[in-house]
Length: 34
Image 1 (spheres, rainbow, N blue to C red):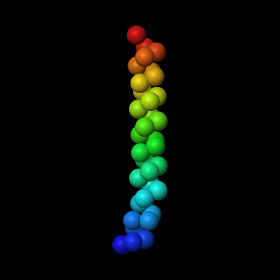
Image 2: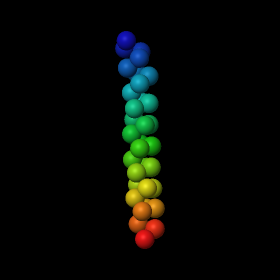
Image 3: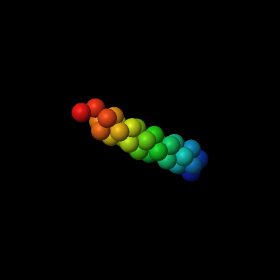
């Protein structure tokens, strides 16, 4: 169980980073396109 949490931790952080970056990119595209 502990090893599962250790492997999921970085994955969740990576997903959060990717989600934040993609949302920022989407916001930028929305601003570019009138």
